[in-house]
Length: 628
Ligand code: ADP
Image 1 (cartoon, rainbow, N blue to C red):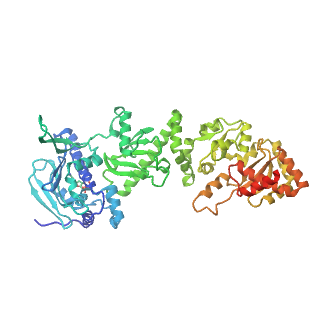
Image 2: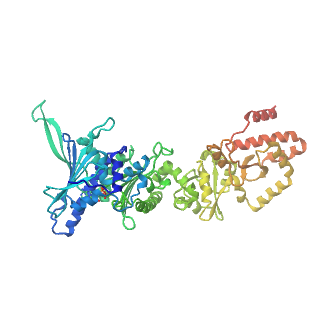
Image 3: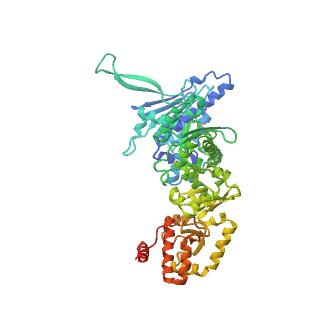
């Protein structure tokens, strides 16, 4: 019988498979089982409309038979089978649809891409076989055909004997090499493991005759071989079961095993969608952040299944960065037919699914925030930072999605508040959302400006994480109320009269203040009198966009050690503190002393703001000189 040649494109792919250095060659079994399952599906659906098909669902099976002596692995199904033409067209040509872009097969990286992400169907069997035989009988046909190929130099098709409909694929497994032990694919335990890993949820039983040694009955040392016809797959995926059929324990066990967590998830989310995208999702919000969550080693992503068959372990396109903590999977039948070839269309489908998944996560978090506050606060402690980064990222593109999920500690007993809660209980006429930044809530609470604002009955948000103020600046406002840093803008809560007094004092004493500023040097932008510092003598505020907190964060960033942008810092002196009068007096009586006072006050204001002084020794000398 004359050998037939493969079509050019198929030849290239075949060549790639035969010489594959891909490390997960094991996926070939998944591919063949999926094909078998599709073939059974086709016949099963035909049976629903065609009275000629008398098989019932329970009659279908996929059978795997390893034979170590012959070094063959057989995968048989009783599905629709193939006619001679179908054998020729389906296995002689790949990429019938023509959209498989072969440019991507150049180089090693793209090989990994193609095989790893999509699998390449039937041909992947050539990664582990040096000869493949396919015997098939189409449903209703009275003849059967055999297709045999040893690789690139072509294939042969000839008639054969086959009693029943379906397809039997026999792989002659490659000899073991130095570093590749292909023989493992003939081990029962290995086959079982692979079926569990990739094909556990195939809807038809995948069976294999297994054998094990066991003690003979009544004997202490005599063994016998027991064979068992075993179904290797569990068939019904957890996410296809009715919600009411699955217990919390089952979800938790599934989650722990699949996503390697020792703790049960904080929340289980089920989603079923039909319409523009048909899919099911089973999602988990972990109860704690994985140890590497806030490092670049952490990989986000959901598992992607096509009709119960896993096709990708970490599909990162399914999750936005701000929900990167979510674990779980998406199963979509829409992906089956397109996935290996129509990669573009597949991307569009994925985007639709990703959008829907994102919406669902947002809705579930909102629900948790509204009805399970304590749980949400625990969630926030683990993952809140990620949401705040989300607000800031992409120039604020996601702030509408995320702003109502944010929590802040506040001067209201140090409790967490949402922005909605804050704005609902603002004082009459208050049109700003006040916040202050610092290392801890306790330290912020003691800032002079914060004490003063609080004493007037305003609530203040305490921002303690590096990202906080950047996120708040990105939000700019919430429900028409602008965010306002009390250390910068505290003046606006003073009465008109108070504002007027301060302004007058500052103009009147311009010279004194200028003298003090010059004594301190370039570090300070200006020295001013203020009446927003409560009982404290001095405080710091800033002018312009950059706050002290932002300056601190920026200076810590890589590359900014020397030249980080500086905040324009203002030293404020409390008008109603005796030090104000003292300063004025010294300007007349002893300017040298005033120069030293200015430096000391500046250092003190920095200390109060939690910033440390630049030259502690000089500061200490100044103070001691005053003391003696
Ligand atoms: P894909 O499954 O992505 O279409 P494959 O190369 O795996 O690509 O298979 C090509 C075609 O061969 C399938 O679409 C199917 O029509 C046919 N085929 C493969 N295996 C079987 C089988 N076990 N029974 C019937 N048809 C099959």
